[in-house]
Length: 426
Image (cartoon, rainbow, N blue to C red):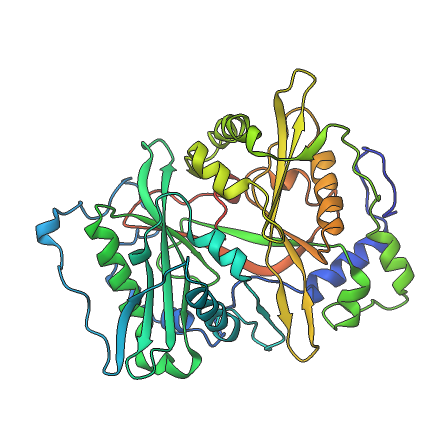
């Protein structure tokens, strides 16, 4: 049952299988909304009037590389795109607490929400500061739309730099696009396409012509698709708030027993990552990511930014060998959701970058689940990317309803399977 602690492969009993099937159907999922959601990009994606005009690969592309050639700066549009009357462009200054609070409020009230309006992502200000300020970030790539009269922030999109390798090509300077959000009351103004065109213009002016991004909807054309999987850490809470239901003849006590985890981790030399581990973690992760067709080529400074622990933002752990070398690592970031109508919060941990070399994936990630629960997480989410399938079933993850599409802007390549993808975007 759920409290067995050996390393033997776990075979599901009929009762456990029934519970996991129940969770597949009723699991709370913190993925982007499906196509019916009231989301600007989603609405437009159904007929693709905007995306069909963009340099996106057609399905089954065989020629690899840029779709449109890079242009010299003097051939690019020099002036910002025209805004609808009453609105103006602005940059977000992340070091300004007032600006960060404005962005938090915009996202908290207008960003990703499920179809039934039961929960909404709740990005903390510390999370946003982390997500938007990697080495080389630029204020003019943190693009805002403000109301001219009031100065109110009504729309936002971000681009942060990354060196990305696609299959056998040399690493390419790209940006990661995220946080496209338009105030609910302004979605008839068609601000989203203008935001995308303007952030593209600004990025192009810097000499970068490719981007990577994810969405919960199908646009032309995904390079790959991953599925969310969820592992309950606090089944009692999930049942209490109505996101999970007890199956017939199932009791809460039996459900809790199924998902019970040990109080302590099993790997003796597993510890919190520190700044002195950055070079070794950089080497370990860089070597690991060579296995995959799509990945970020991190610098040491980027490893320090993205992986050094920050309270309630990112947790990272390493396994240290007897000789002081780092042989394994695991990490997860925190993205809670407000449970609308319940005056409560669902605390979710998301699997980030993990590498197992000296211990099994099951042992490493079971320890990771224990650490996430210790941090107060109610559920642990993981995409079926990289080698995650090595532990998902054994550790009693259930399939989520949400799928995440991966896209490359202005880059053609064959489609990839989830285990070909080695990049995790926030």
